[in-house]
Length: 270
Image (cartoon, rainbow, N blue to C red):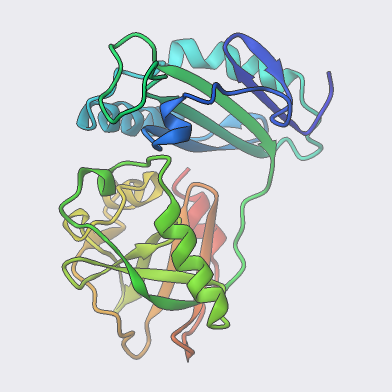
């Protein structure tokens, strides 16, 4: 098989359009699961160990069984990549971990041992183009929720915030948290370059513990601080995740100076 996208579930390779997920799967019905999105460059997963560390800690936090480890995953990932035609060698790996299926309806989790894992590989390239933003008036991240600290299947809030932004003539939304602090974007962490230093909202604001955000903090390239919704003169704002580093060109129609080389900053973290 040669293709640009491929998936694996329950021991079977195939296209994402034809492989099946049981209708009683809790990840589908209740968003009771976790995922990681991993960049593939030159057919090599980037920062896989860091992604899997977050995956494991999130599963523990939410009371899920431990997901597959790197030793289990790498043979699968390599087997999938061998079947794909990616001219640039670049793509996106998504790892999914669901709590399993319930024989009956309800919120109570099934007994351990029935969890389900599946993965998907897609061709793709990192993004570094600028983006205009609004601040969502309807959606706020819950600063005290465990779910805000994990990359779960539940992305309805981000979808609604982005739709709100697009209806207002912008491309994406920034989110405040229940504390009133500026928190993050719909699918990326926020970085603000102010007076010679990179700043990012603390996890106590409800910000997701992003992998690239962690790289910046561990290397001493950024520090955590509470941020208000109003840019200051001379600010540069970025939205960063494992697949992109995009300068914020405007917040609420207020123009910002774009960071001159977001790709260089992003690549230095890999």
